[in-house]
Image (cartoon, rainbow over all chains, first blue to last red; front, side, top):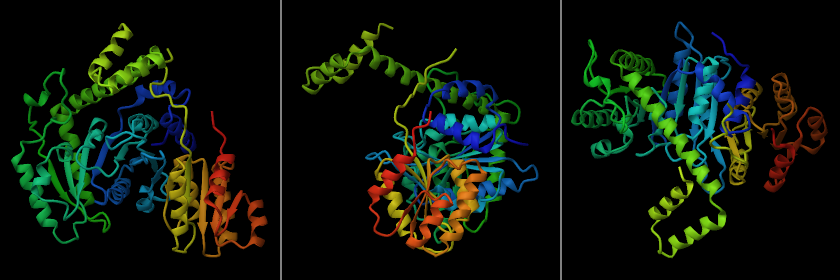
Length: 330
Length: 142
């Protein structure tokens, strides 16, 4: 197995894509037909749960498998909302991967996106996929309860928890746990790990098996899993105990990912999720283009007049937006 | 048909690698610089302590950085910094400017410049000088 691009060219293409530089969209359009081959895994969780260390260890263990898959890591850290700058520090925890030319690590700043990944992350994943990487691991920013966009890209989502991070009520709140296909309880060498696992387990026991709730969007047919074919049964979110720092349990985590991938394939849910991902992807780009088109057609003076009317409370923001839309004459 | 980019951006964030080669564990200076560059709107990839020249060059390549900043207080700068410049050169990255900070005696600077270290910023250097150095040497790519 080898890459279709030199590592230097790959890195430069990623930069062009990340910045939407001239020619980037043509390159993305050209390589799109070669995407869809990689296994894409999302890793998310609160700051300090050990995501970077775990991702590094996952990559190292993948590389030891008999087929030596090529592994890419996309590690997202937050941009400062004030300066726009960022400190991307995920590589600090990934030094075990140094010297392995079968691993490619790219840090990305979130650049204002609020869903835990950057707007361009899905395009960067496409570039890595088409370049020949077998496994792509996306590490999100330290995520709380609403940063769930990684579920719009990844096939398998791992939520990382660690001991002492909140009680059972935290676990049943809406948000990040709902997107978990697998929960990795990291730092399993620490006190309190069994309490954490039992709190998470009872939260999972309350919820029905988590099939496609987080991927489902209105306007699409019901997921195929509602009529299971053959032996397919709904996926039950599982909990895996790991200690990434001590290199323990990560093989079990990779086995759980294998099982989830097999489930996606056998049940038809993989296909369904793909459709959902495409839906949200096209919708997001349409939203961008419409906004851009609206702003181009509207003169600055007209727009400022509308804003002024809204700020004086003569016009409701929703009515203002409708006015702008009407002026587009779609 | 060529579609316009949906998210065409006019401003591009500079990406800077900040690394600590060698064995000393004093990373306060590196962190201060990283933080200042972040506040100047740059994206700083910070690799942490005890990086070999190969690790630094490989990170610079994968991250496609616009400049590489090295902090070294161990006294091994005359050996390590040229090796890093060479490791970047063999990867086709001789156009990426390298700057260094830490404890570097003035008499060592000419040889380091000769070896490809374009800027040396000792203790007390104003952060603004480092930012100006980066901005001057990183022309907008097409």
